[in-house]
Image 1 (cartoon, one colour):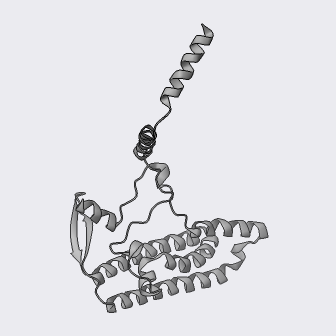
Image 2: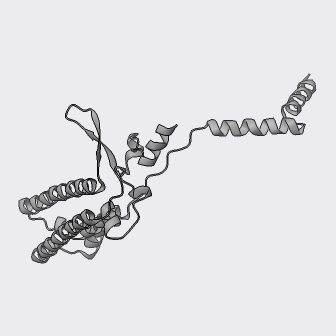
Image 3: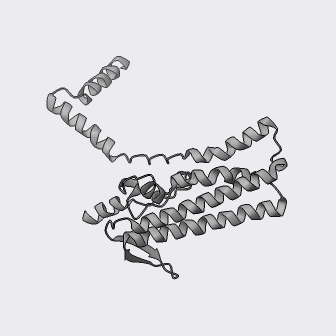
Length: 221
């Protein structure tokens, strides 16, 4: 009885294997269909090297046993120079953007007070001016926080970090890349700009905003 059951299992296994070219093709196509049905894993978020600057600085200060509070005057001067340099660059980008040739209308979605979205069409110069003003307000907010922490607790560490991070942050700005570095306004630099992705979006389940090209392709389909 045991030998008979064993021979039946071998016979069923032989039947399940493809024996002819036609069976082999069907078997292969079925495997590919199963692979296609499997959803693709989301792309890993891009890691910005700037994220590691502050931890590296903190480790360096701790390793060298430096007391940054002994250099408050020097750090205040360095911080003031970094702030003035950044705002000078922002103003230069604004002047350059307003002299640049128009690249066609830009359609953006703006949220109203009631939560609804409204499409608005503007020129390239208007869009760039809007982005520059947004960057200016954001940097001004960060400036107030840094100065407030230093004034309240007298800690000089934020001055050290911001003196390095402010100039580095310019290289992440899309308009700086276009009008100063001379990069083409295509791909990731195509207007309207894609909202920056959070490195923790994959952990929280947040879906990244679709790029403008992807939105246009969906509309065509």
